[in-house]
Image 1 (cartoon, rainbow, N blue to C red):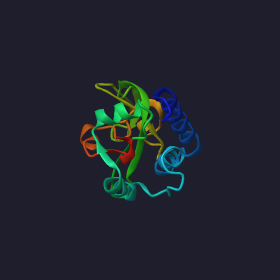
Image 2 (image 1 turned 90 degrees about the vertical axis):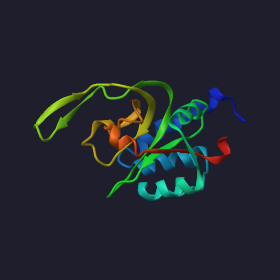
Image 3 (image 1 turned 120 degrees about the horizontal axis):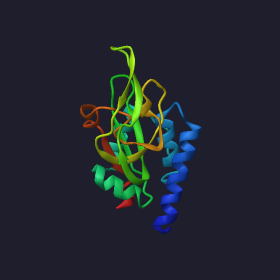
Length: 166
């Protein structure tokens, strides 16, 4: 088994490549990481179906355990279903950072607001077909909370790691 430093660098590199290759597809980005580091033959599955797949085939982990595993170089996926398209992310190795810290457009008030950070979270690899929410795009510079942007939405996010990682 590769040492932890090498495994973490491989995970970071895979996340960076997935972000660059799949900027408009969260599921393609996450499955690209899985193909590179977990199972070369894995097929891309849309986000909502991926959540079902991970529930049945991977181990459920807490956010804290996922953070620890990612910092050992293990692929940890987070996701939640939604009515039309769900969303998938990967935990990006590194220190925890404050959520928020970016500007967004608030349609109801027709103005830009600043989302102030409140809590430390693990970093995320996240891409999205919708560029409306700035928290959905992260190459380790935003947190696992940011793609959802609200505590009530983030509560619905689950995290998984491959069973062989324990």
